[in-house]
Image (cartoon, rainbow, N blue to C red):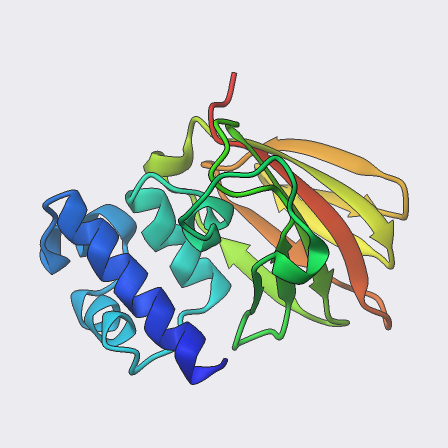
Length: 188
């Protein structure tokens, strides 16, 4: 991960935590991420994995998309070259925040490129129980585990699932999987 992005992630977490008047211990308890790890991330001494960052964001009441959204002037148009891109340091998966930031929408759209053989697990978390998502596969193969059921997705398939119950993304194929996540932060 780029040092500037690590630093920006750390500053954003610290700022959000302080805005909510949370101590490191409070955020650790709410997210299930150790106090020491959160502190290292805030100081840009550690690169959070997708799973860790998602847990911290959920505890702060944000999706990953909302976390990465640039502050500033809201616009109904998000040009590709201006969209925030982040790469998971553990698996190498790339996520692009497609939704225009700063809008009043509860829906986030994310494009993901998931390397062959990669696996990311998002454990159940109460802070994300009102969130739901659609996973729409464009290319490759994807195995999704939700509520202990394994779904094998092929191009064109779309899976709806709650976010807070925990889930696993896995690419069993030999080629990258490219898919869209449509996340509803409001749920049903």
